[in-house]
Image (cartoon, rainbow, N blue to C red; front, side):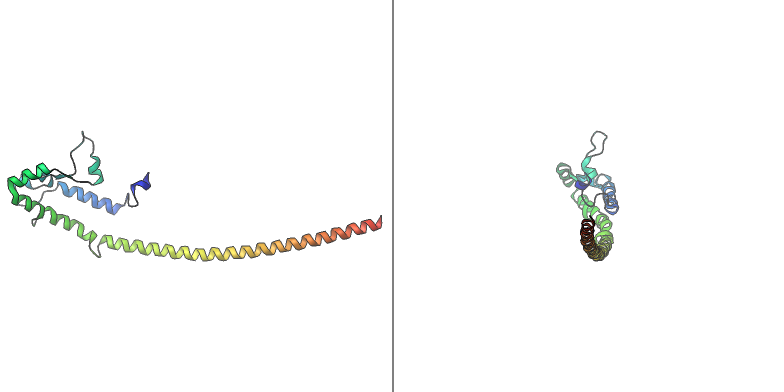
Length: 175
């Protein structure tokens, strides 16, 4: 079941970003806007309606819901406040960019983490290659020892057969 959730399931950095994004959906933006147009849900963008007191599954997954009727009403009521809420100086877009830029920009935390993970993977691959060499050497040593043992056993068996044959001849001559 965990495999179906994906490789990054449970990743603390990504869960932290998702949590911050969830919080950003309920924050107020656009100073100067009327209080009826300072949150994203007031223009029809939300994490979904509650489902009977239980958590909304889409909200847990980080999905957003767009209510076109609410958006159309907000646009008809106060188009400039909607624009300010989305893209103004203190708007959602700027806040979202400020939230994600440190993580996603070149040299940001995601880039650093990927570089670190690449280094770890390279180190592990190098260790695996070294261990493969050592295991192959050990395998060759064990094969050589086994071959030497088989040869020694064959020689001892041959000597034993000769000795047994010689004893049988002596025994037959004494009778």
